[in-house]
Image 1 (cartoon, rainbow, N blue to C red):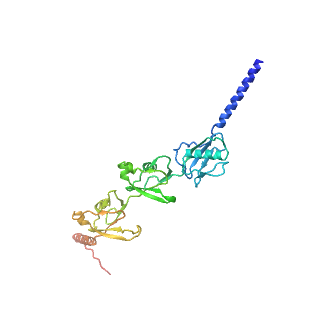
Image 2 (tube, rainbow, N blue to C red):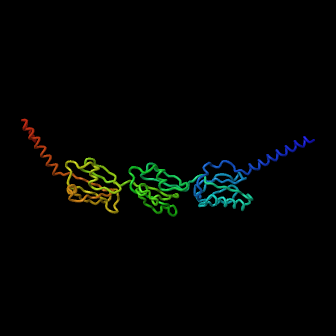
Length: 325
């Protein structure tokens, strides 16, 4: 009899243990929540993915994407829940209130984490090594954005444009940041904080175009401190034999279109600059420096070449006559 009672007691204990374990498992959150739920806590925005866990209610535990109107929907809840601009902990309280108000749960325990960010795009374009768009997950600075873009390209100019979003999705204020201040001087004020929605543009450095009687005509990037006529000629590897002493700079006038707009002609006395009688002239981005041909010098050289050729021919006893028919 005692043995039978002891066996019954063991069975009862086992049943109680199994029931207790089942109740504990029922209170655990259901798996299936994305692993990327350790993103920094920040307000939810359109397109963000929220991981919602309701303890003891597996039918409510799921991932939900915020709609374009900043709302989410859960099963058994009649109305959508506005979550745009709310932190995860604020969404937790709001969901718990709604579950109680609609008599779905008595004392819900809700956990909300940010599984994926899609509402804070930062676009980096222009003269960078790898233009891209990424999401601002946590604290992001201008240097962080340039690092993601693998740095500036060789043709990058001396400034960076940061345009923040304005009202109703329109571009807002544009801030100009000097590359020298950001990278060389490491000025903290230049390393702007980015929160999402910004467009970071790195304009290409301005160019000066050199054509005419130079050894290597072409377009040359300007340094950050500008470019003078003598520096431009040095980049073009100097003048050719019959270059004119007067050059011309063709410069777009204010308000003229860059492609085919009216241009101002500025004469430059090269010989006086080279002889240090006139100061060097600074050029602007987009200038065309044209060195024309010195026709008088070329004509004189042609005559001299003919005279030398004629003299060499007569000295050898051979005279070539040209007869016109």
